[in-house]
Length: 283
Image 1 (cartoon, helix red, strand yellow):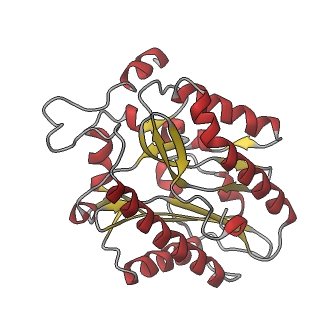
Image 2 (image 1 turned 30 degrees about the vertical axis):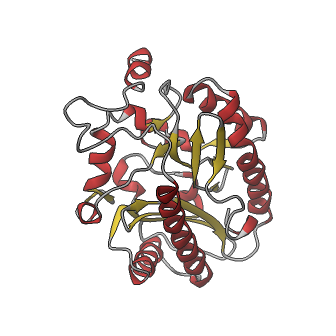
């Protein structure tokens, strides 16, 4: 099975569908890069502001709903996926056994606990996907984890340049996480993805949802062969293009992550945002 998945990961488009769902393993235009960056900044701002409002006793569902409302108040009309919120042990996906359990729950936030907000809106045809980790009050273990994530963020563009394919890149990051004493939590995601491609899309197609994901997200990935769009341990396809990268680490009691768009070109790899909009606060 791994060998088959590796072969499928090299598929960048499907004959017959390429006219309406063009390949995305190409360098984006300057206009497109600016569009993705605007969407990402808008989403980061909303997540940060909602994070400052979260209080003891809030549920994951309340936080996710407020983030959705904030984004829609800013002009968002559709979503690649609706906002997620995870609190406490659920930030490391403890107790999550099937896809439906990823959705925001009635889990209540307690003082000192870690929370993660994750949102992927579509804004003027461009998708962003961000992850914001913080805590209700100071959490020194989280501060340590975020320091490691910030170091990993600096290393990731170099790792993209130095590894032959996505699979070896995934393994290199997995090793760095393990060597630092953390658990790799993104291997618990569907298809164990470290990241996925982002696409230009029609906003109205993102208004229909299934299991928190817009119809357009299923179409964007599957119409291009799906496995080439997902960065995991089996990926051997072309990496050129735009990726939402989301390393997610875990301790015994909580998880932490960030997620941003990475631009991969033949001779250059860089984050769209040179410096995170809110520095280490946003990680």
